[in-house]
Length: 253
Image 1 (cartoon, rainbow, N blue to C red):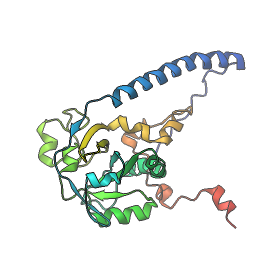
Image 2 (image 1 turned 180 degrees about the vertical axis):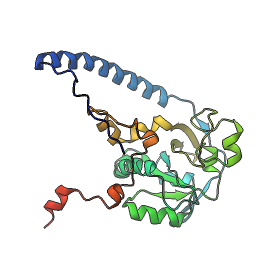
Image 3 (image 1 turned 90 degrees about the vertical axis):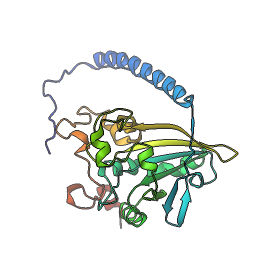
Image 4 (image 1 turned 135 degrees about the vertical axis):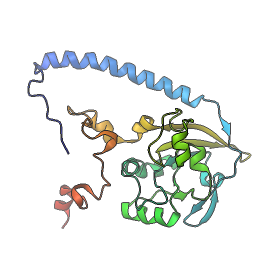
């Protein structure tokens, strides 16, 4: 895969000139932060839709309803992980996202938020892949219900060529059967469940800490020659072999 080379004539200045430029950028960054805070406020004020359909999922312990997935909390975050029933493994880009949110699940649980993962592949296949990747989050299968289709992350061939609204609230044809997304739900004291928010495509960037770090460095995401996250691999498949952190390797007796 081609990697972009930094421009050898990139502007180089004195420390004082750099500081002036950095402060100018800081004002733009602060404005973006304030705008992000306002968008967050508006997101939290969106109207809700009551979920009337009774969704039943396959869990490692048996059958479970959407309401039961809240696990005693009032807020539920669902990551729609791309894993078609016919695929042998989960999507590598979704795996990158899961690498980031897996350790956050325990922290969310202490803020009245349960986070789970849902895919259409059968539960045995999901659990085997979870073991391979070393994740611990709860993963359930929607193979027996319309959850993925209702929340616009799974499409059959007819849907993909129909021109009807498909993905990310648009009518753009989608090339494959599965798409990534995140949906949020609230359950009130009576047990009623409400859909409060969903986001797709670039709306999922916020989940990927690696992208945040790449945005800090001179080359940035460097994806011009690797569109659609083509550079991403499952974390145990970079260079065709499991990754071992050299610092951890040195520290191991």
